Amino acid sequence: RRNALKEATASAHEALDTLVGSFATVADYRRYLAGMAAFRLPVEHWLSGTRLPSAFQDWQPGLVRDELKADLADLDAPEPTMNRPFTPPEGDGVVGLLYVLEGSSLGARVLAKRAEAIGFSADFGARHIFSQARNFSNWRAFSERMENVRGYDDRAAARWANTAFDYARNAFESALNADRTVR
Image 1 (cartoon, rainbow, N blue to C red):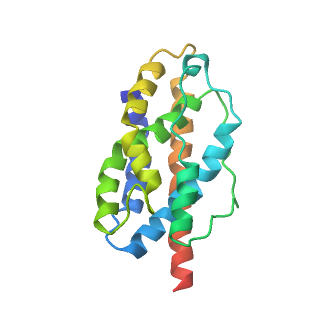
Image 2: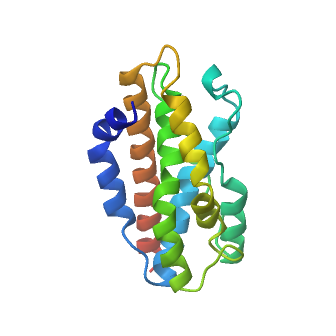
Image 3: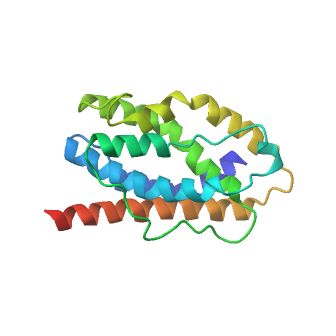
């Protein structure tokens, strides 16, 4: 299931990774943080009111909204307004959304090193990244449960995952456009 989702989302994932790019300066990081907050805060808000499939009853997704809000405060950056709430597609595919959220812990290790190189840490400005990087075991636990979901709909999961990637891409594009307007 995981490999099938990886294949079904490859182009959307690549588009997001290209847009996020790498941050080498504080200004780059501020744009990244604005985009991440515009993506994660609405998605996590939606997810907090959603019942997960029974295979996930003893597991919780790695949410980072509190850390993101603290990071924004550290940088005196405004919390993004939810102009466009997260609306998932039809079907029973929440596993696809969780795949995207939990999978971000894999890339967080690289992002943590980049954040440290420009002065951010687990205690200042990059709490959400370090929280994800330390939470790799949650990815493994998610992956195990994902394989055991009954009534798994691979098409719905792929739609939900691609919707999440597209929502993230739009959030990052909005952050980039807002930054260009300020200049």
